[in-house]
Image (cartoon, rainbow, N blue to C red; front, side, top):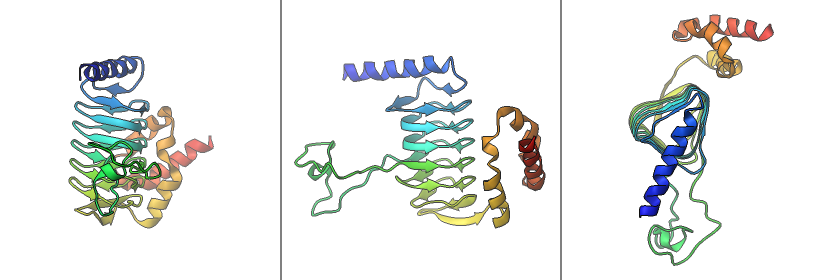
Length: 223
């Protein structure tokens, strides 16, 4: 118990120390285990638990969220008390208890099935907004620009720029018309360097500027 506590404290200090020399901001009272990656200007708030998570540029994770085995792209906004991945999959045999198949059972292990893979990675696209207390199950892919409503339970893949909510989730509507979604996916504005993002920043907060943004970024890339 004491050894594990010391390891956790050292891990917190290590991540916070490294962040002092990087552009990302990691809260010292969050937990980081496994292999994690943090992009430029990303941020992790208080009480977050991350395990084997990749967080892209400018993305942030709000207070007390728990994320396991997930790749999160750039410009993602993740709310408080969100749960992403790490649920695992149970075998539905004569017994559902993991002591009969899990290689690392929570209690006693009778048999280990090394071919059984309980976890699948979650993939979150660019510019995704996830509301407070949303749940995203293992193996789900969330498309670029999607919005996950607060409290939604996401049990299957979410198309780009869809707004989903409910338990289990359903598509409420799409943020843009199909031609505009295709235009945004082709544009890939999230890949722009910071100097170009600053040039287009004043247009980004109003969806009425979509055509102007597309023309401006296309022109920037042609220079």
